[in-house]
Image (tube, rainbow, N blue to C red; front, side, top):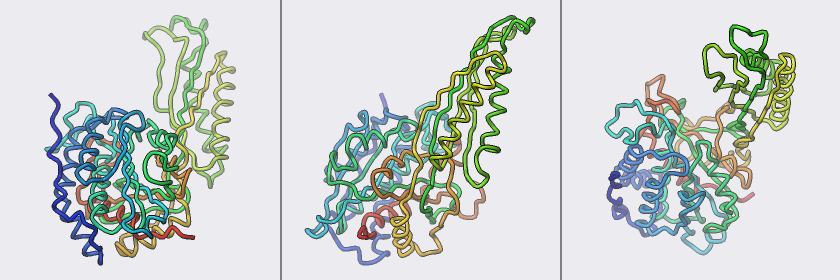
Length: 423
């Protein structure tokens, strides 16, 4: 029998009536009151990781918490596990203002955990190696706070499945999330965050424009002629051909993409052969292309195909190239980003806000929301103070830092209540 979820957190720790937040200290007090419960939820989610589109227990916990708070929501979204909730504004004037969206991803990864924590994964081969347990817990914490304070505008809370390659964000957009067809009104601005091991806990940061890269999958199959390994003269060697293709592909970044532009091409999976003494008739490679600019993306895609086909022909082989478009560039609206910086500096102090100098070549399906409305995706520091290195994302030793939970909750509440969406 699977472990039962922990008992529902009791919202009586803070009043559910809308009491004014008259200072940052008051907001800190509200967050401190719920922090033990939110930490417990985070640990429980960490112990029971679920991968894309299988986040059934996680979805049930989210629904349980929203029900306890009396927040209206729709479930069963994005192939079954997505949940979208809506909090209306607390006054008539606020009801006329644009709706802000807050998003958390809820899925885990197929990685075996090596943290040794008391709350380590109980699902062998799976773990929250990207901190989505923290993201989910923080959005539930923000829901608690927002349900207990005046809301100057409507807020939609998005608990999204399948960020890790499943494109849950795209599915929710296709279901009409941003147009307000799921619940609430149209979302005029979307905010999301990600735990960031490179930043110290207590700090947050982002940048205007491209923040994360477009992510495309590259699949190359070389077809040739099989023979006994002792008689290579009878073969068109697919392994040798594929090796030359991979080497030649490196010229795309070094010689085709401009030196002031960005691209990454990494071939990560190689498959060939069934026996040590047989030159196989087929060899294949799978990798990823990361770009920040549409023209560079188009150029790199064309060059991958041309290089592989030309190299294969030189070896008497044939190349089959498939490039599957992945997530778009995660783009932060410049005007909204500046408003985000102003609000966060007012709340946290400028010393705790970082303007990231460069984009990162990782990818995020938050990008689909950003294509439909002005959006800001930001980084939440999780590295402990004084610690130069911290296990990074997708490593088996990674764990979301509980000390970052109140910072993330506060940042979400600030985004929902303190930014002006007027021109």
